[in-house]
Length: 85
Image (cartoon, rainbow, N blue to C red; front, side, top):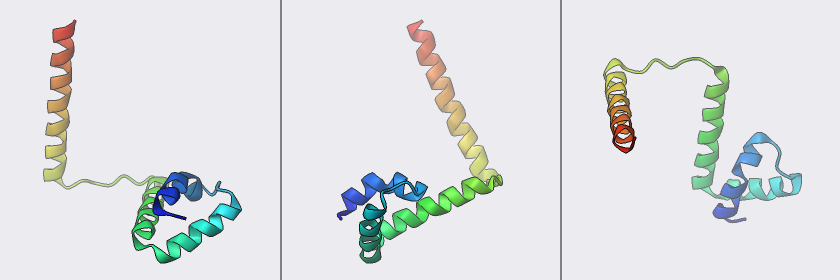
């Protein structure tokens, strides 16, 4: 199995719905491919964090920058829609 093949099956693998025969190939590839190991590990951690359902408190400065960027994008979108209406 190549990295490209693994990435195509990644969602099914993480969900546990991939064919067991392909699972063996998937595991063999992962055993020898560090970049794919990192991708799968990051996805598993993301799913675990999401399932825990605990909000993550953003640092105040980051939160302010994020809100400002989102507000700016929102205003740009609203202005563009107003011009076309």
